[in-house]
Length: 204
Image (cartoon, rainbow, N blue to C red; front, top):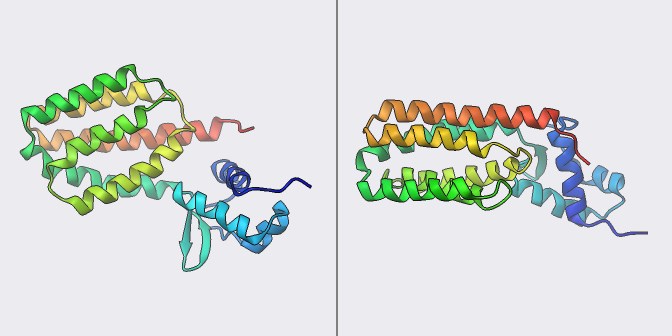
C-alpha cells in the first residue's frame, strides 16, 4: 500500500475547503480524517498544520476548524487603510520612486512568477512610514495567507496594477482620504475576484 504523506492530505482538504465541501467553522477531527485517508494521526496533524500556515485552518484550543476565508479580507480592511492613513503624511519623493520601480517590476513579472512577493513589497513600502512595526507585521501575515489563496486565481495582476497606480496617484497628492478609499476598493475587488474564480474553477 502506498504511504499517504501530509502534502496529499493538505491538498485534498484544501480542494474541499475551496469548493465549499467543508464549511467555515466546521471541526476537522484528526481521528476521522486518519481513517478517511488511511493515514496515521501524525501525518494528518502535519497536513492540518500546513493548512494552518496557508490560513485555511485555525485552531480553537487544540481543535482544528475550517477558517472563514472572508476573515482574512475583513482584517485587511481594518488594518491596511489605517496603516496607509498614518503613512502618507510621511511619504517622501524617494519612497515614491521606489514604489514606482516596484510597479514597473510587477508589470513585467510572469503571472505565476514572483509578482506576489513584489506586490507585498509595494504595499509594505507604502505602509512603512506609518512607524507601526507591530501593525506592519500583522499585515504581512495576512498578505502571506492572501498570497497562498491567490495562486488559485490567475489573471488578477493587470487589474491590481491599475488599482495600485490609482492609490499611488492619491498618495502623491497627499490625498489621504482618496488613497484609503481606493485601497479599500482594491482589497474588496481582490476578494470578489478570488471568490468568483474559486466558485467557477474546477480542481483536479
